[in-house]
Image (cartoon, rainbow, N blue to C red):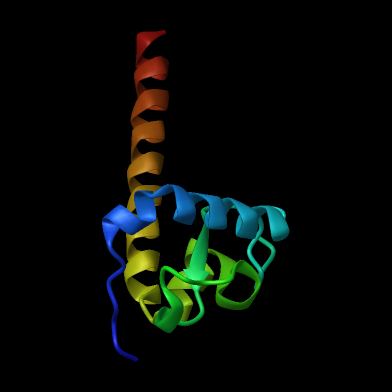
Length: 103
């Protein structure tokens, strides 16, 4: 699959933001694959119609996990998620240890 970069100006434009909102509302802000409501993104089914897409035909709501799966970047997302989880758990453990030693 060829990687196509979508222009940042396009993604920050009013038309895209409107299309994005329509798609997210259509899917009730949930992933069309797994029904998750966490980190839901809008995915282009085809890059041939970027800029002229029709929300029903060309766009779908996917969570970051399913979106990465689609683009075969799953391992990178999993590693980043695990790293954030480890960091959060480490901070929590340090905070709890500080409370115990303060008593």
